[in-house]
Length: 427
Image 1 (tube, one colour):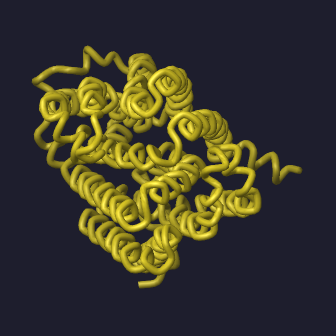
Image 2: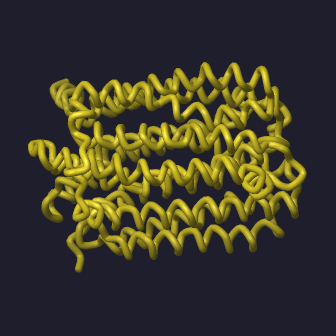
């Protein structure tokens, strides 16, 4: 009993429990939106939604210059230094403000080009990109504000912000999907995330007087140089991964049909839902811990707490999900999506390795191992691309998830070898 009480009192348990509540809420929201998309849109347009999500993933990183993890690091280090914190806030405001203006102009005035590139020449969704041009700066600002809150160690505030933003996004999505179907679903993906700015600004304003922290005299070129390594890592990841997935999806559409591509997008959505627990707890709790770890022994403690406290629960949850896959598909989608059941084994198996490797990937970021991050990212995406090219002709859409499993199994192995000294004390 004392042992259980000691676990319950740990910060990791409290944060994980609150994070679990956040994930459960987002899962419920995801269930509603997935069901609505399945009913009002169907498998055909699911592939279009996947392409837009991949495109937005790239824009997210470019619009923030990939600074989020760097912001967490330097905000955490500047927690007790007001002047250093002013430099962080001012540098971010002026640099990202300039980027936002340029990106919005490119998206708005070249909306037809982006429509043809992302959705194909036969579609007419140019207004989606004009809406994105207006929404993107606010979404980018919200990501940076959340990174500041995270760096200040306000874990609960980050999670509360996420919960509130998800609920607001749900309301917007329901209205748009019901009223405009496919066009509404695309608009929901574009507009909903930007609404997070309203909540994140309120929380940041409680911690620091934002307007008083913004001034050209506090802009720091030295800080920009320090953030550039984080930017390089994030931008490389943001460019390579979405391009690879876009290429794979377009290949599947050409060889297997757009409906099959929609099935892959469906299993990817399911994967995204349960991986939210891992990604948020890593970003919110473990990344600041890794940043503040001063040597290998402290880093080892953080890594082991993740593998002992998080991975067993996650793996058990996926085993349960595998046996309930029929129910999960019917609940999240419609009977038209039942072929998705055949994709669960390889997707879930790959996601176990993905979860195991995630914390090591964050350690690359925390230690600023830029070259190692870029090389491992390129290797993993290369395996995913060529694995899919080789396996899809032989196994159909199942070949993509088989490639997913191989990718993250190899990626995890590479990172374990790279961090062998930290993990096992082996030189």
